[in-house]
Length: 113
Image 1 (cartoon, rainbow, N blue to C red):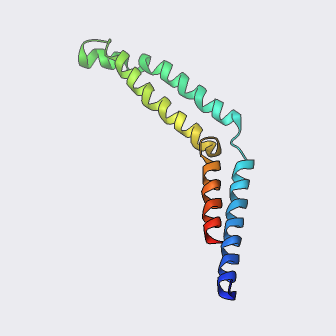
Image 2 (tube, rainbow, N blue to C red):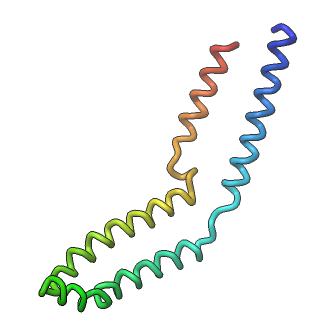
């Protein structure tokens, strides 16, 4: 391997090493469980009390309070879905196929050599 190519490979290895250190820092500092639980409890309490808060308005506008039930169901579907996505984003290494990425990197390195 000529000198120019070796220098480029060395620069690439330094960049990969820096990225690996950044990922290791993210991986070793998880979001506290108390934060996740607090968010879920707050959202649950809010969704339980929300129909009581909007029932009178539904009764006045639609002349029926029964519309609160499907409205609360759809709203809870969206909000709990967003909360679940947030939990998954807090711990990205549990859902990423890291072994597959490592295998692809290894295969591309074997091709280069």
